Structure formats: structure tokens, C-alpha cells
Length: 269
Length: 343
Ligand code: SF4
Ligand code: SF4
Ligand code: FES
Image (cartoon, rainbow over all chains, first blue to last red; front, side, top):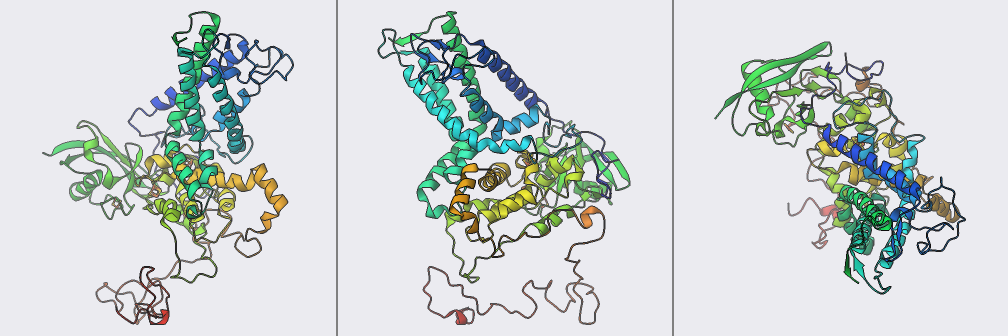
């Protein structure tokens, strides 16, 4: 009679057969998010195995999906941090150093966990909508208990962010080799700023800057940091989605310029 | 101004029930609870519904309106279109008693299992001093009106009755966070307790609790995630773990002083919420009887002014012997005299 799995001995709930009685279009957000996430996964998979069109030597544009590029077979000039890995076979992406880090960082992110569990795993799809799974153990055991590794991904992702900033600084290379700004430079900088917003607004960052303290009054400086990060944190989902799009945009732009589909629009030099 | 609108209200009890159609007059400015009251007054005098304050502050009138858990007294009829049929059902996570009234004992059992505030050693009651910045986080959680909408929405128990013994629910995660962030709480193992005995690992931070909370408490962002991070500090952070092993800090955490002893029962819906008589240590309290051993007919004829005092009947007010002095005022009188002078 009850609509949910019941426990022997439990008193009955109200006999309502409908999966949900919600009348709004609750399936729209999970569908939209699922489309975005699946598109990104497909796009990124294709791109990281492509092993070409990731670098524009004239202006030092390097796509974040391949940064840092440290293998022997990276395009000359794209290895801003040396080549200390041997030439990689085709099935290992050139961005092997950073890509697992940023992917792991996003998968274990508290915001993506929410959107992923809702849209891809239907657990639950929307509030007060019955989920299809008959059993549920949450993040209490293997493999989902590894979601708790978000902190270590954050430490590593922070290092990757610094590398991205370094790459972006190199992107101010003019046509004659001096200083210059093109549309690519602007796109790259918008992207690193979005990535910085995403990384700094992370719940882990909020915790380690001050959230773990019991007495803010004894740590006024960390309290200030925490207050700042808390403000960013309220918009964490926005940063997460924005930076997803800016990464795709940056990569697509660099791919297009590198492949010669169109040339970079130059503002200065 | 009034118009007649269509409603579907679930009526029944534990033996079954169904959605029944009604047409009720609705006037400007009314809320769903007004409609329930009009139904009771005009068509269904025996429709059962819990309510009390009609101001969104008592947490009694929790129900599901068009499938969403909401307070009946805070859901305006103006949020629906004139021709919309409004469906009203009881909370679906708890056993039904009758019509819109459910048995929410599960929540009270979980409340009883949650370790209470642990007073700091060496500070007398009345001598507690805290700074506003230190209590701010905890204060957010004190806004909770115990409507249990969050408990009802959480899919961990809503869709999986079998998780009830292990899972305390968002309302008790904010309680755990409130005390863990409390500047004077002396208990140091609340994080471990929340993970091991309250089932915090079941929460997959899908945020439905936050979505339905009528007090707009940021349950997930400000309580559950910080608590999960605090558990990670203790249990999953290799750097912290290594540091503690090397510095032997794990011995300094109040272990062996009784503070970290396991608190309460490990887990479980044990008594009324399980459908059996109470089995926990605390038995139901008998009603307060008159001197002649009988229940008072009315409060007016009762020989005591009101319900029994939580301080005991032999305490008179103002209490003597407390050491509270307002910090802005000078301590002119000795604590012993407080309460006898200038009141
Ligand atoms: S965020 Fe966690 S506690 Fe809140 S409703 Fe979702 S699963 Fe339940
Ligand atoms: S946290 Fe919010 S939703 Fe949950 S019981 Fe308290 S007031 Fe209600
Ligand atoms: S009647 Fe008190 S909260 Fe609705």
C-alpha cells in the first residue's frame, strides 16, 4: 500500500500511489544539467585523445586540457615546464598530468555531486520525487566513499590553477614576439578567472581557510578569509558551470586557431 | 472577491485512504491552512490537521501541497492560478495517523539520540561568555522550527524506509553542527559521532532539505558539508592523520576524560516510531496529578499554576546562588545576594 520500500514492523504511511504529486516541470532542470554534463564529458574525451590543435605557437596559446604538456612528443614550445615524460602512446592523453586532477576535482565537487546525483543517477531526480533505486547507501561505502577525497583534489587543482595562470601570462605574446593582446588572450584570461572563482569558492577552501575553526575571535585574519570565501561559496554552482563553459570555449577557440579554421583576432600587436 | 476553487485532499488512516475532491471558497489573502479550516467548518468537520500558530513559527502545519513539502500556513493561495486543482496530502515519510496528521515520533527519537550540549569544565552556569562572531554560525541553526519538512523530503528515508534506524536526518545534522561550532561545547567527538552513529555518510548533498526549509537555513552548505569536512579532518586526511601520529595529538583530544565516550545509543528507531511500545531507557512521563491523585478537570481548577517546572517544584524565582552578572555592570553585589536585591 505504501509507495516506498518498507521495513518490517514499520507503521504504514499514507497510501498514495503516485510517484510524485508535483505539478511543476521538475524534470526540466535535471534534463538540462544532464545534457550539459554529458556534452562536456563527450567533448573532453574526444579532445584529450585528439593530440593535435592544442597549441598556437605564434601567441603561446595553450589549451587548459593539455596544460602542462610535459611529454617528449608535445608540440615544440608548448612545454612550458619541460619535457620530463617520454613520448606517450596514442592512448595516453598528453594532458595526463593535469587532466585526472581537474576531472577528479570536478567529479568529487560538492556542487557536481548534487547535479550529477540528481541528473545522471536519479538519486533523487528532484525533491519529493521518488527515486527508482530500490536500495540506497549514499556515500557510506565503496566506491562513493571516495567522494571524500575532494580535499586532496582541491590541493592538486590549486597547483594546476597556478599553472593555468602561468600559461595565461605567456598568452600575451604579440605577432612580432613582443607584447600583444588578441581575442585568444582575452578568452584565456576569462577562463582562468572563472577557474579561480570556481577553485576559491570550493567548500574545501571554505573549510581550510577558516571553517574548521571553533573560535573565529581568536583568528581574525582567517575569519576575514572565511567570510570572503563564504561569499564566493554561495555562488559555487554558478562558478562551476561558468568555468565548464569557459574551458570548452577556450579549448574550442584554440583548436580553431591552431587548425587554421580562422585566425586570431588581434587587438594589440 | 472570493472565488470557488478545486482541491484534492488525502483522507484516510493507516488502513488506507484516497484523494477526495472538494470545491472551496477562497478569499483574497488566504493561505492553504485557511482553506483547510473552511473545509472543516463547512464540509468535513472531522478532517484531521495539525496547526497552531498560523505564523510559520510553530512547525505544526507541515503538509505536502501539490507534491511539495510546505507549511500550510505559509503557502498563499495567490501562488496558484484560479483554475488550478490544489492537491493536499500528509507528509509521506512518516506513518499516517489520520488525514493530514502523521506520526513524527521518528524525529523525536532521533532528537533524543543526539548528544546534548556538554558544559565546559570549570565554568559555572551563568559565567558563560561568548563572542558574537563565535556563535553566529550556531545561531543560524537555532532558527529551526522543527517542522520536519527537511526530514520528510530527504530521499534517504523518504524513499528507503529501511534507512531510518541508521539515519538521523538533516534536522539533526544541523543540531550536531550547531554544537560542534558552539564556542563553549566541550564535546570533541561530534563529527565522528555524526558519521558513525547519525548516518551522515548517507547524505549525498542533493540539497532537497535546503530547498524546503521554511526558515531558509542553509542546511547543506552551512551544516552538512562543513561537518563532512570536519570528519575528513579526523578520518580521511592523510596529512592531518600523519601529523597527529607524529605529534601524538590524538591523545590530547580529551580521550580518556569521558568526553569522547560513545554517546547515546549507536543508532536506531527503537520505540514508538518503529511501531512498538517505548523501549528506550526514558519511559513516557505520567501526567501531573492533583493532590488527590486525579487529573485536574480544567487548568483553572488545577492546584498548580501550570505544567510542572523543569527546575523542580521546590525552586522559587528569582533563583538564588547563580553567579550571573551582566558584563557591562560592575559586580557590586556578591553572587549570593543576586536575586534578592534590586528586583
Ligand atoms: S542534502 Fe543530504 S540530508 Fe539534505 S535532503 Fe539531500 S540527502 Fe538528505
Ligand atoms: S531545518 Fe528547516 S526544514 Fe528542517 S525542521 Fe528545521 S525549520 Fe524545518
Ligand atoms: S501553523 Fe504554525 S507553522 Fe503553520
